[in-house]
Image (cartoon, rainbow, N blue to C red; front, side):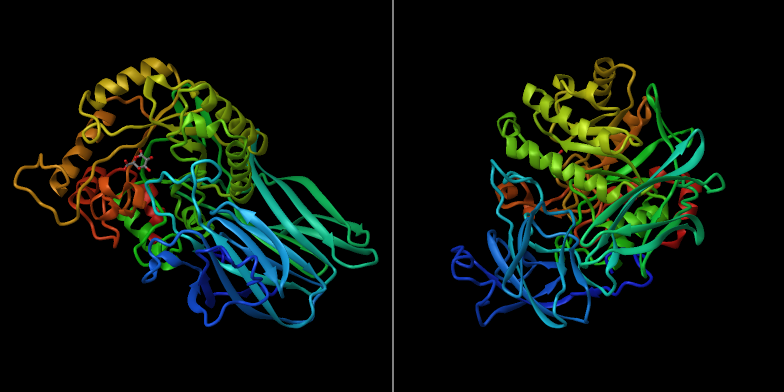
Length: 569
Ligand code: ADA
């Protein structure tokens, strides 16, 4: 499944999980040799969803690679082929004919095929995970791994009727304290000849809106409407109450889930449903040595259970749009999420390029479109550690902020800055977020001095730590707690940082870097023992280090109500 709940009650969904034929294409010959029609044989088999770099001999393969599978369609008017994510450039062929392409590794795309013949079909996907310094997001300078593959589900929906629902987007908000849902949906006719029918919109099983409509041959209609739901209970971390919406049209339907809560900023405070928010958070990559980006759902559930044990109330989905199933789980658990696009570490020269600016805006747009209904997402992050101390950085932040505000006026914006008091973009966003590593990379000042300086610089705005932490190699112990890379030192540095944060009282909170150790990019490996970023509170197999126990002890007794809602995990 591509979500944690069924997204339709009547449409057939054929998941293409399984062993696909696979071939790397280091010489990039596949296109000219027509591999989309004549797949090279014999081919290796790889499991989809999955990434290739977790397989023997493919660890560092970067470049084009080809996948092929077959599936059967029943008689139908049209078929929609969905990809939840492919890293990063994708070209798709069905039965040797091009279907289209997509760029951007962590976001969904789909293709509609009209009147496909019933029976077996041949699906070929060319995936290219090449990273460079001028056109790709993320770029080739990274501190996580450049996994290539099809890490999230692929599925086909045969549409047996001529009128169907192409999309449904829900924007929940509180308007004058009344839970309100703005709905945008697209109805499509995939046949010659007009179709007429009634669409009906239900919330939690109750019919709230219905209207008749007619669609011309191959025509479509976009529905925009607002429904007020005065009786709907609010979502909060302590009581994560969700509501289910269903749109029905001519024998087709789509189901989506959402929750109502209000995020408001007053001076230095962020208020959630009127109550001051305190973030006790952690950064989490989607990574595991055996799965790479393609985490199975049971591992997501396990990660959530560990987060509950730890006592945190928030996750920063560093540094890319997370698997929607993890976001569904966070909605259910009441865990707050900050979501970000993978614009990571771009210099002013890189940001000057139009292709980077355009791709970043397109990714932000697609991420918000995909996730706007998730009540757990409380803020959008526009980028991480880019040149926001330069005019180029300012221009990009301006564009990104404008894009995000046009689409979603209900959530605050931020970006993670490592530029301290040289940053020139803080006025463009609602929350000032800072990454800093006092006690690790920086020893020239203390957290307390730095925070005092930052508060003076940003004035009366919410101030959040988006990253802090230290490296500790699992199992590396020292008699003296000041030995770098030991678990003892990591725990000590973390506790010192937390003491400085708690000592201030004016911080929105913190996100510790990071949940677990994560495989890092080859270019950085010489500065990263074991080729891992070792700042995890747990190692890559989710085994806890001393820092995990130190944080757990520190957070004992905090957020008791929030934890109660979390108990299902
Ligand atoms: C940065 C970056 C993280 C990670 C971290 C580190 O702040 O945003 O992705 O690389 O540094 O471990 O150094």
